[in-house]
Image 1 (tube, rainbow, N blue to C red):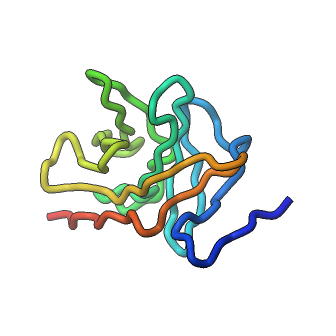
Image 2: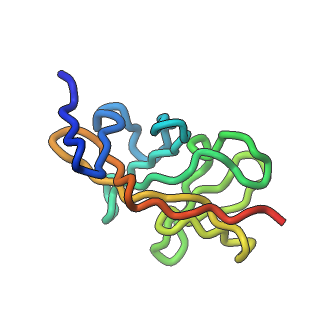
Length: 126
């Protein structure tokens, strides 16, 4: 079954819900941007979409990072240099001057969709 895309909508289907792994990340390509999707089935919200690119190393690895919870706030730890990035807003927990892109994400009729109009800009290293 193919996704029906409404060109007037900013929500873009990027994968099926069965493509996700509970408590883990997967990488998808949205336009030309690698995006890390996370599914936390027992949480609200349950889905998160952040940049797959680690801004400290430049490598596309964040979907492979470890999910961490502290005081009800979820983050992903980069597998390279171990910085933590909030899944809610992309803020680096170790460096207040660094933030990764994140997008609103939802499940709709078995599809995971990302709201392209909800883009946040990524801070520059340095």
